[in-house]
Length: 425
Image 1 (tube, rainbow, N blue to C red):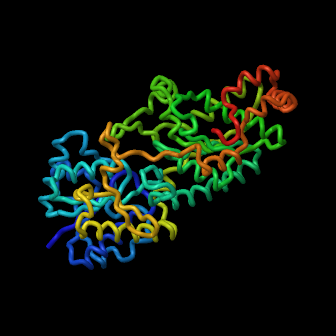
Image 2 (image 1 turned 45 degrees about the vertical axis):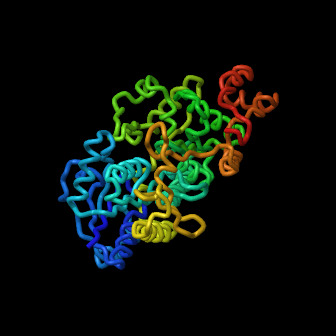
Image 3 (image 1 turned 60 degrees about the vertical axis):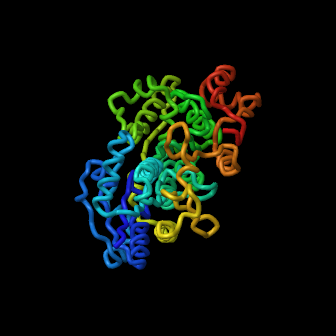
């Protein structure tokens, strides 16, 4: 009997269990055996076929609305050594797995694609795009599963923090997960009506410093005070740290710097909110300002939330589509080994791994926010941030400078580098 394996890699995301459930049900209905593999590629790459569980319709029929992952998840990376990829293939073959459903983000997709290639056609892979970061290269407008639930839960929390800020006349700095891209931070900030949202994409290819990020927030603080509102919420994507030079990261986070098995800086281990809050307080105090500041980090509280109906509906289709793809003849040679499963226009449309792989790195490409899009432009226009027009209008500049306790010329020199035309980032 043909055996299908299911594994989950990377961080948790709402909807994993529904994807497992849907794929299992469809596979069982087609007469396949299904085995769930614990902890992603962690045990497979060590040659250990033991940590698995048999899956059937009865065992998965009611898990679709649960958060977390019944198969757990891990960031193990077999692509660091060809021998590990080979061992992963051999272990899957020992398990009798010829069809594999991988659930994860770009790291897991890269590993799954490598396994498919190395198997020489003996193992066909369907990858279901999962990440609250929303940074897999799906067609524009298509989210990765888990993102919409994380945005929904995060928006509710930021709305609560907005009331906290207003009620206590304080500023709240909310750091939101997102290693490579600012999708989740912008999605939450835009939906919650945060005072401002800072994402890595707005800096283009430029490197930034903690002083630069602090100055952006300070500009908003003074602009809000000018409006007689001594409070606000600044949403900051943790990925801004990836735009800092290594010496800047070491200077502010030295004892917390660590890397995951894929070579990524563990941003979740860096106390960005605390460091940014203290840095702001110091900078403001030097000019005689006392501002009540609080920092909150959102990430782990979002990843295992029960999926909202959107993600349940979405993963039902993706899990079904993954199995249908694996059981169908390849429509083209590029789909022979495997593909990322997408739902485009209401239909399952597998995307060959080769179409979304970076030729230079051999890894799945990352989707970032297009700051030239209306999606970003609208978000940027509704933020309270210093604009170039604030500095070119003599009356407004004088008022802002007075609020900051500075001379107009000094204010313009200090904050000119962080002021931008509305909508331009």
